[in-house]
Image (cartoon, rainbow over all chains, first blue to last red; front, side):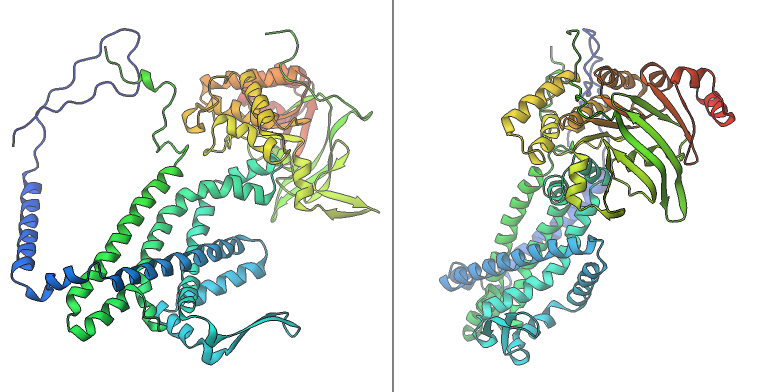
Length: 313
Length: 268
């Protein structure tokens, strides 16, 4: 590899004092890292041999079957169901999570206690076990009723009449809400207390300062882990078999694989769809993070004096 | 710049000219007594500087006036209205949050650490409360906000985020933000303590203009020069009590109490 002289930018952030020419750029031989390159080369070699082996020597991957089913209508429909499960349960999780976080930060000990207890139960038991429980809910509570405790009832529905899809959504959403509550709480606590003081000093109410001042700033802290939670939820939906709900991507792929005795290519099919969705989510997260980085100094804002930073004459 | 004042001062409507009245104010944090017995009066249009060693309770007292801290004892009123409480038949009732918020609207506060909203531009910082709290039409708020920023010398920084402003510029935005609510009283909590020495002057200049316009101001400060030049009254506090009060020139030149003498000998 040819060594290029390193061209370090001599014009830093400050413009040179009036008119005086800058010192010429530093010319130096770049530091070499031979060990790094050797290790990297070995890793690439191993990886290439793995890919070659997978393509040539492993017929059980069965790329032909993979190609046949990757765009199968049943698979793409199941992928849509998985997306619906993810979106619906995350909506429940975020709304409930915000409520739980606000309760946890409330001065009222009853609210704090309720929030703590919720987290204790839903974070303390495995989501798979919770989903099995939700599947058996009709055996425990044959009817759901809305009304005043020990008083009149307004609304009642038989548990057996609730679609399994919604039981799965509730099971996933209530579990995730416990994690979202912690994400939101960390975000709210990350905002300097001077911010809410300044808002109060200006006569803003609690809800105004939350909505206009605290939440927008906490979003910068809340969004990255929430993106993680969405991606995690997308994959957790494969556990809804526990309910049992069988129209999601993973269960559909297994149901197709069963009669034709080809589990491996269909697992690859399902994995490819999961990967596609997580990739799309990652792109979305990138733009959201950029949006909420306003005013933090991390974003690219064109400062009025920016044109003076680069001295080109 | 015209001879007329830069800032419009609120006009006194009531006959009572006492703006802030503190009677035996006590503030405890747990067992820690921060304010022991503070009694003082601030007249309309008066500029009062509070000085004293750190931990003497100056900032806590200032925060009590704005109900950012809740009093433990004594009485505190602004424009004749009790702060944080309603009194009915000799019984005090805690105010609802929205009543307390309404009281704070008329009291502007400037913080040591500026506390600008970092996700908003300078102009957005200034117009936020007038639009949200006073329900001012946006166009009107923008017009007035630009005018205020212009007056604190930031006419070219409307669209800058706080992160791109110097400390002195940020503090001037913070002053404009407080003035945008048309307060009748301005509280300054060590407004220049977090600034580089060369930026202190630009903030003090804005405060001097404000004082000249007749604004009632209570300023916690370590800037003795500012106190001497601008203040009508100087209050020296120590260990939660008022040690000495008087005309700033006299107190600074000829302190009566030993504690005041000891403090001034170190800072002057």
